[in-house]
Length: 145
Image (tube, rainbow, N blue to C red; front, side, top):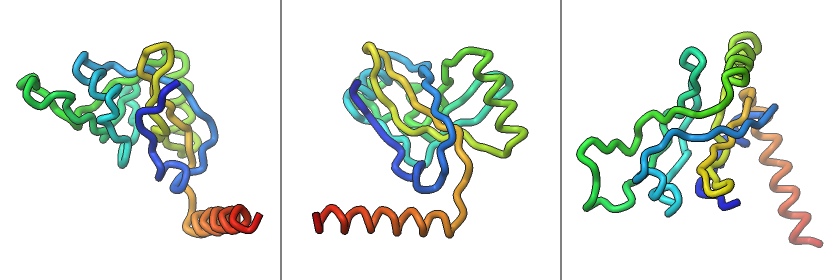
């Protein structure tokens, strides 16, 4: 399993409650660009549209700028492929509990590009400070040991 991109702010800004694996509806040149590592999940999020899930804000840079299709958009919305029952369950949880869907990492599984999304709750400012303190304590502990 090769990881192409991660979202480092996701675990800092959100408390991840559950993770889900989803496929991506990509074009051929986008797949090549992702497999070459020319993608970023920074600032992206997942939105529901009926029963569909859509990844918004992810950037996929062109694989070869000289052979680019005329209608290529690096920041286009990408449809996520999951089972309809899972999609309905997620939409219901998002409405009732006030949760959000956050992309965590983009990776390859059996030569297919997959996205791990997390069902998350936003952290408060004091929770973020607490996680910074824990991280610094672990670093000091590693250096000392």
